[in-house]
Length: 197
Image 1 (cartoon, one colour):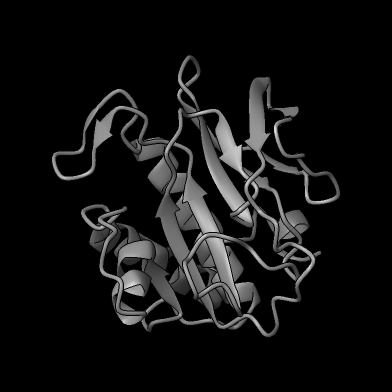
Image 2: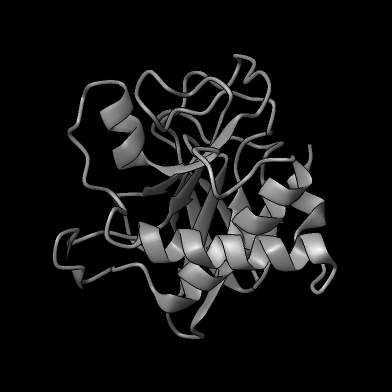
């Protein structure tokens, strides 16, 4: 359950950024040509399932959840400043924080089978991180403040993504439970260092 802040660095077109989080070598791939734009007031968090292997993050998301297969540990990697525009939700990046699961390579999103499905460890770490982020930024996971790429796609009338749809209901319930625990003081923050710029 480590984390790494790479928001002061950036990948370049054709040249991935290389780093290590808790002993896991990762790459951050370039795809975001909008990071110079101002995000505005944070109004929601959108969950995504990226297209690569477990150690490939993307700078289109503000945060990526990577997975160390050998050690069965998931980590959060911050790839953008919170104030920067992401490139993760078509026509819906304003005021929207993108969180991507580094997974999906050769995996069927309908059957959740294949080489890189989202793991239980990734879901656990991501739900803790998202609960903390939402609590810190006064967002409510019970509302549309927490959504997934498929639902955002439907909102804008595109309706082309399946994304993390099958994982999302249980994930959202886990975020709500951890959020409530944080709000009541029963649990403490683990990710304070990457919740702000």
